Length: 53
Image (cartoon, rainbow, N blue to C red; front, side):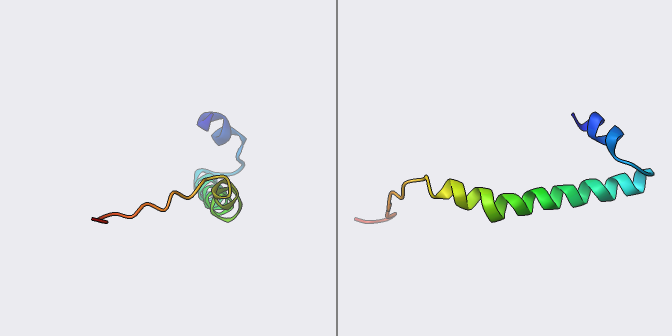
């Protein structure tokens, strides 16, 4: 998959690396902005207390 992505990106090597870094940062930002909060709404809170004696 990574080889196919590398072949699809245009330009010289330095531009491809820059584009991959930008795509990676955009994917991580999308995960933290939309995906993780959406998944968190489905997780049940268990209210666990540590050290309660």
